[in-house]
Picture 1 (cartoon, rainbow, N blue to C red):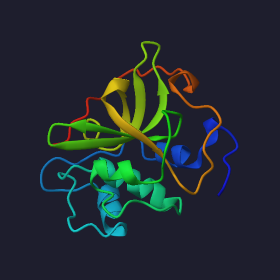
Picture 2 (cartoon, one colour):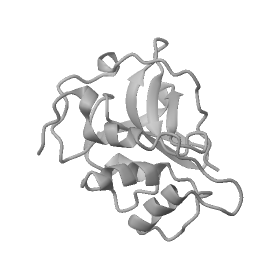
Picture 3 (tube, rainbow, N blue to C red):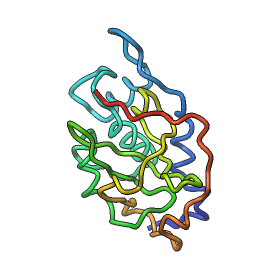
Length: 170
């Protein structure tokens, strides 16, 4: 089990931020980055029109050498991954949505108390988005990493999101 030095330096969060701005391509073309994730993760499809929030989170943890759920592409499969944890910086948050679920990496909270997630397929891109904390079904932490000392919404860094990306997965 490895120990991360501080909440602000979680290696998977730092790695995930490198993909900010990756977005779907309109029409029959597919983002080469998303297509690369699909290939590495051995997906049975190759387009960016299929909801890909779980693909993004799976790619980030896979690239960090960590285990991912066998059905990583299904957001709710993340509810059985790793270990359960209260909301905290770097936790994988899983929520319901019409037609399925959504998965995002929690990176903070707003002054209004909304959770901020860094995720894929948020407004058809890797972006930050805000969420009501009551919509989450659970928060998970990688089994390979020691649980953080500070947990709970009060332990999350206060952040400002200048543009709220609606979660659109259809």
